[in-house]
Image (cartoon, rainbow, N blue to C red):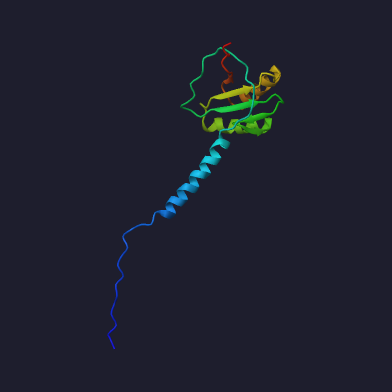
Length: 138
C-alpha cells in the first residue's frame, strides 16, 4: 500500500468576471427603462412672457404646478392644498433659502394662482416666482 499523499490543489488566481458583467447589464437595462419615467412631468400650457431666466441651478427648487383643472402638484406629484402647505413649510424650515416657483397653465383663473401664492407665503416662502415660457418667434 502506498502511503497517503497530500495533494495540494493549485490556487486559482483568476477572477471570473462573467457574473459581474451580467449584473452590470441588468442594472443598465433597469436604468434605461426608469430614466424616461423619472423625467416626465405634469403637462401645462405655460403663458408666454419676455422675461429673463432665473439662475437656480445651484440650489434645489420647489415647483408648484397648477393644471387647467385646478389640481396642485408639488415637484410633479399630485397634492392637496393642505398637504402642500405642510410640505413646503417643512422644507423651508430645513432650508429657508429654497426658491419657490409656481407653474400655472395659462387657462387657470388668476384667482387660483393667487390662492396658491397666498398658501405658499403662509407656509413661509419669502417670495414666490412664476414660471413662463419664452415667446415663440413667428
